[in-house]
Length: 449
Image (tube, rainbow, N blue to C red):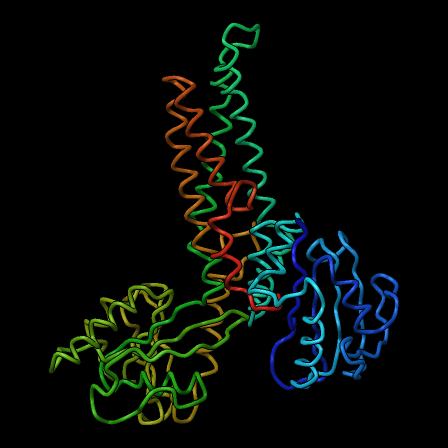
């Protein structure tokens, strides 16, 4: 049975000069001919057309049409793109005219990319890279998503799968042909292959979640005692009044978070409640949340007043790689007097800032950018970008940790665990039956993608 032909707006909603409507399926070419009252144009060449309603002959718009006969298209099916003016009435009229044709229906979320996957135009990891590329808001996200869309991560997974198949073949040969004249200890020859593969998977997992952090954002927590200038610092970095600033201690009770971009990567900076002995249950909850956010952050910025001692509550949270900021610099005399001792012996002296005058803020931003770049900016082998990938690789590695010692017991036990590992790796790219995964993955796409 031939699939339906689907139609949807492929560009975002809103005011713009041009909108793109995409059709995919066996009736795409006939629908284009009906809309133009002409034969199909040459493949992959933009042609100016006058679009009309095939039911009434009423003119709808002038624009461009592109014809991509399958399998040489994004979905692998016959595909048509209509480039029209972006007025809502124009879009609605052209889509309605397309839907009037036999076999044409509205596309569902992610259906174009799902058809591309089902027709072998891209695998699951590449499809997820495409979703990330569409959603990319920073340069770092764009680079990572483009590498995944072009198959860099799939190449890693397929390499693993090939080595698993090689090892499985050696083990299965010893099981299935015990009486044949085959080289001895075939299953034992699989051991070094499996051990090397387990080591590679472990290295891949030991990446400090860098890929997920590029997708989801680097986390920074601003901590310190009440009235130290934490909220003022957040507002200065955000260049807007994101948090309430007051002379009353304990104004910030919950976590206030803003999203910024440093060194081309998304960064979430959180202002937290002041660390002190809580005066009531609400403040106690705010302090608990502050400590929880600090513990889960990639970087902590401790804030204390320029001449104040660093309280033990701040010392206990900050690590050697974190930053200490001396705030309210504008209140404390000339520059020569603004040189307090390091936080602890042997540690780098604190950075002095004034959220009021802006002094020191540029230096702090440079330090933050350096920390983010150090954590996320390394150009290495492709990294895990989703929790789904990490879970499957962990399960595959666990199966290998059982298979390797099982080789000394009997090849049958090892063979089952190697099959489990291969199954998990296959789920990363879709080289097995993954119907249960498709709805979850493609539901995140927009309608026209």
